[in-house]
Length: 290
Ligand code: PAF
Image (cartoon, rainbow, N blue to C red):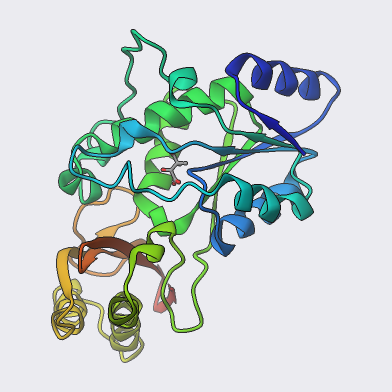
């Protein structure tokens, strides 16, 4: 497994792999890898013969008051975790390599990027799509793998890939959870013990929505009220948003139909966590995937 720090070297290595007929896969990450990331790597390894994992804490996707400087950087542990998984290259460029002096381009997916996460974190998705397009250009992967915990991010990247005719297929993989339901996130490491216990409220509120759906509820309003009531009962939780939206447009839904997402962002103390549940209606049958 080779550790690569420069754009030129990464491009050269990926070009060489493609010219030898390899199917190049990419798992973009910001490091501080956990079992959720490793599940993406395993899925990616199954579909690619040359696998790149990028580790780059992207300053452009953090707001001025967010946790860019505090974000965990654990390159040695990340390398150790990736080593047994058949990863060929880690691409870990310094900030100046990705954004040299004078860098002035941004990529924006209008509409989708302005809702929910985008409304709460202005500029966040522009930072994400800018860095992801750069990574795609550098590596030119056939497949790129993202987690469904960041459902809106996955949808936006898919839109960017379609709009710009990119040759990279976007693969979105399931959420990985702790045994008590908490979705894995690098930010979980910020939680103090009482907050860690409180953080299960996100998945508990999704489970409550699923239960109401299983009992036959199809209208969104009572489901959202249920989700918010569970969240409100947790004293350490402050809700940023909790909605049920169409999974394609991310506009609020009124009745369950097609694919919807119950999505939320919740502060547990000062740590902002997100989570979601996919709700798929097929005629009278509804499947909820937490
Ligand atoms: O999901 C993440 O970790 C980041 O948003 C990504 C896709 C690696 C871009 O920096």
